[in-house]
Every structure is written in structure tokens, then in C-alpha cells.
Image (cartoon, rainbow, N blue to C red; front, top):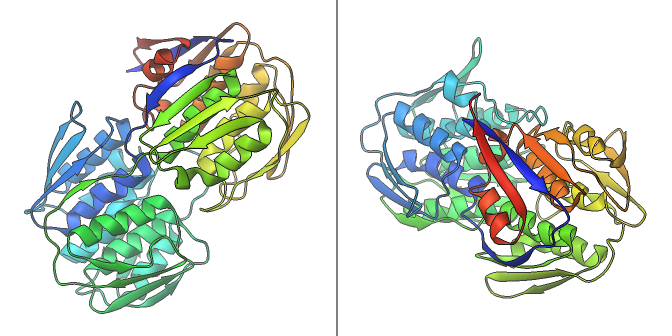
Amino acid sequence: MNGIISIEGGVPLYGRVRVEGAKNACLPIMAASLLCEGQITLRDIPALEDVYTMCKVLTALGAHTDYNPEEKKLLLETSHLSGAVAPYELVRKMRASFLVIGPLLARTGQARVSLPGGCAIGIRPIDLHLKGLKAMGAEVIIGHGFIETIADKLHGERIYLDFPSVGATENIMMAAALAEGTTIIENAAEEPEVVDLARFINSMGGHISGAGTDTIRIHGVSSLSCTDYTVIPDRIEAGTFMLSAAITGGTVTVENVIPAHLTPLIAKLKEVGCEVVEEEALIHIRRTGPIRAVDVKTLPYPGFPTDLQSPMMALLTFAKGTSVITETVFENRFMHVDELRRMGAQIKIESHCAVVSGRDKLYGAPVKSTDLRAGAALVLAGLAAEGRTDVGAIYHIDRGYWNLTEKLASLGANITRTEQSH
């Protein structure tokens, strides 16, 4: 099923909203469950399309999955894996399914995975993943539409990543958890989701240190044991709700959040004219005046997250003055610009930069999600636009936001969702 989100804009949002567990943390953690023989319990797992897809990938590999969406609890039984092939029809839907290659190789000595799919936001090459696995002793065979890896036993190695890729860091870290000796990843990704994966593996008896810095050390162990683990809150969902308060001129408290994970966004929201108060697991945000123009540059963590670039752009279309947004992480992440222009936004693309000339108003229009975060940006723009906005292709949004329409409605938004067949 797909649907349309319809918004009558111009309503300031007020109230409290709770953030789900992090999509970008739970997917690699689900993949890492393959490292263990036994039952894993994962908590605060959101009922997202990507979660269901990853469950299907794990099931295809022989794991048993039992997910309770009401309790947000996932039981994974991984004692008897029956296959080492992640099927194309699942992998093409979601790039994160490529993360099974590292743990599968480490546990079974082989893995065959179709070339990945997911949002069309850039090349995102997998060569860094393969470079790391080769360095640890794997043979890599690239066929027509698939990649196969084989290794009798992986061994520790010093691996330098040309770019601090999150996926490559995670895949290498998982493979190294069961390798012989010590693996050192240099220029590693520092994202909170990488730290959460390391904590999960350590909770199973792994020996990983340095996660959250640019150098991660993994001391391989012979086996890992069962665990019960709760994933971190989703900083991108939290940021989206913070931006919803800013763009509508409301006051919102975001619950179940780690403020330190949102430092770059908090800094920019203060610059644009918002009051932001941080507590232990809460962020209160209130816009105190007109939106001021700011410049934004996306960078690997702890820089401004690329996943919040398009929602931030929606806010800056209403700013007083001209903002420049520079995208350095994904080369194709301005696909939402044409849709925002349909609503009256004044945005000019110059190479990796978007020059946003703020306007007093945007106007509701039929628009279409081009990827997950672009969909969120269009919903935010619709919340503040004059008139009705209909956002289509919202299956993209369902990949990363659980009950987004209901949560925004609980804050006072005039927003509805209608389902329709593909």
C-alpha cells in the first residue's frame, strides 16, 4: 500500500512528542545478530518498512524473527543459519541489507549478497566495505549483480578508510568481531549509530574500543553470546520534529532524545532564531522571531547530518535573506529542490551548493517524495505553506518514520493520510 499525506498549512505546532528507536542503529544491530548463535532480544525497534525488510533478509538466511510492533520488541533466533545468500528482491529495496555480508562471512565463512539498492541519493560505493574484508583475508568475487565473499578464517588487520563511511565501518567492525587477532579501523565513521553497534557487540561479549573516535580497535573473540539490548533514540526523527516547531513558529518538547547527538542542528536552530533548552532526555524548542538565513554544510558526524539537509532546507525557504547549503556527503541529494520550487521556493543549484532565497510564503501544491528525507522536508514545507499540500510517494517516508502523520496531528497539525493501492 502507498498513500498521500494531505496538509492544510499555517498551524503552529504545540505539545510533546516521543522519538522512536533509531532506524540507522537498529538495522546494523539486526545484521550483527548473525554473529551470535542463540536468541537476541532487541527493544525500542520501530515498526518501519526497513525493519520488516531486514527481518525478511534475516529469515531468508535461516534466522527466526518474532517482532511485536506494539511492544517494539524483536526476538531473533540465530542458532541455525540455513543459507548464505541475501536475495536480490530484498536487497534492492534497502541498502542497509548489504550489512549482513560482514557478520555472515565471519560466522559461516561465506556470504553472497546482491548489489544493494535503497534511496537514489548518490553512488555510495561499496568498495570500502570490500577493501576491508579483503585486507582481513576474504576472497571477493563480483558477478553479474552480486558479490560473493569467502574466507576460511578472517584475521586482524590495520585498515584505513579513504572516507569515513558508516556502512564500511560497521561491516568491517562486525566481521572483525570474530576474526583472529586485532583489527584497527583508521578514519572510521564516528556516528552515534556506529557507537551503538559497538556497544551491542560488546554486550554479546565482544571487545571493541574507540567507537565514536576516528580509530576503532576490535579484538576478535572466538564466539559471542546472547544479549538483551535497547537501541538509541533516532536523532534524525528528533531533528525533524525540532524543525517542525521552528518552521511553524510553535513550541514543541521532543522526548526520548540524546541532545549531544543533535549538537550541530541545535547550533543552527539557535542561529535561525529559536530558543532551544536541553535536558537529560528532552529538548524544548520554541521559535522566538522571524527565521534568519544561515549557511549549512553537511559533513560526517559530528558535523551537520546529511539526513537533515533537506528538512533544514525546507525551513530556510522561509528565512529572511539568502542561505547557502553545501552538500558534501551525497552528490545527488538535491532531488527535493524541484518539488519545493513547485510550492514557490526560490532555490538555485550550483554544483554541490543550493542557494536558498527566503520568501515570506510558500503555497500548497501536489508534490512527490523523491527519497526518505526529501519526503520529510516536503511535509515540513506543507506544515508552514499557505493552503493544501498533497505529498505523494510516501512509501519513502514509511521507511524511516513511524506514524509521522499521527505524531504531527497530536501536535495540532491539520494533517491526514489516505491509503491507496500502488
